[in-house]
Image 1 (cartoon, rainbow, N blue to C red):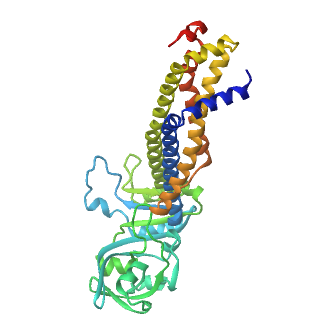
Image 2: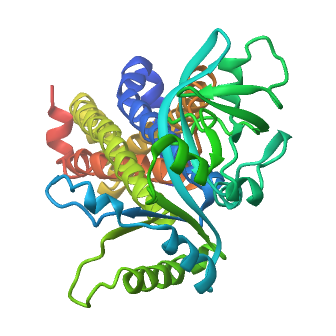
Image 3: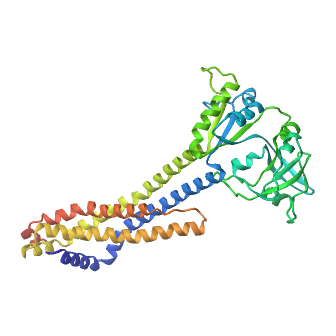
Length: 406
C-alpha cells in the first residue's frame, strides 16, 4: 500500500470524526500557541531591556563608596565617605581606557516655581555626565566648567520637572526655580528619555554643578559616587581594572585589604537582567509546554480508542494483504496529521496572540523564527511519540481475532 493511499485513508478516518479530531488537536493548539506567545513576550522584554541599557550607556561604569555588603549588614557613615575629589581628578588625569568622568552627589526634595511644586532629585555632576548617560539638550545649553568653579546656582531640568513646574507650556529657560529654598536659574532643558527598564522616570531630575550641590545643598566635601564611561564597550573590563588599581593606591590600601569602594558596569547589569529574563522566559515556556504534553497524552488516548473501534476494519485489511507495517503507518499518519494540523493552527494563534498583547497591553514582543520552528517540530515529534504505541498495537493484532472482534 503506497503512501498516498495511506494518507487518504487517514484523512477519511479523521473526517468521519471531525469533532473528536478537533478536540484532540486542542491540546496541541493551546500548547504551541502558549509556547510561541510566552517566548515572544520573554524575548521582547529582553530586547527592550538591552535597548534601554544601551540608551543609558552600555559602556558606563559606576563607582560607589564602601565595599560590597554581605548579609545585608549596613555600613557606617564613615565607610560611605571614601570617595574624594582627588579620586575623580586621578581618574580624569591618569587613566587610558576611560573616555569621560563625572562626580556625582544628589539630594531629594521639593522643587518650587510660584504656586507649582513637585518632589524630584537634584544631581550634582560635571558636563561629562551628558556623554556618560547619553542625555541631549532640547533647549538652552549645558552649564560650563566656569559654573562648576564658581559653584554657580544654575541647572538643567528634565521634561517631567518642566511639565510639573510650567504646566502652561511657557519656556522654562532663564526662569528661576527653588530647590529646598535655594534659587537655581534654568539654563537648559533635556530631551525626553522616558522610563528605563526598572520603571524609573529618566526625565524627573535636575542637573546642577556638583560644587554647588556639595557646598550649598549637602554641605559635604566627599563624593557620593563617580560615573565614568569606557572608550568602547569592549574596553570596560580594562577600564574597571585601571580604576580599581588607581583608587586602591589613592586610598593607601594594602594588598590584603578589601576595596573600600564598589565598581559596577552597565555590562554587568545588562548580563544580570538578561539572565533573569531568560530564566523567566524558559520557566514560562516550560509551563506552556506542559500543554503539549497533555495534548500528546490526548492523542495517545484517542488513538487507542480508534484502534479499539476499528479492530474489525484492521482485521479485514490484513486479511486482504495489508501488512503490519501498512497498519502501523496508517495509524501513525493519523496521529501525525492531528499533531501537525494542530501545530499549524497553534502557530497562527500564537503569533496572533503575541501581536494582540503588543497592541492591547503595549508590551514589547519579539517573535524569533526558531521559536516557531521549535514549537512546530516538538508538536510533530509529540504526534509520532504518542501515536507510535497505539499504532504498534494495531499492527500486532491477529487478523482472524480482529475479524471476530465485536
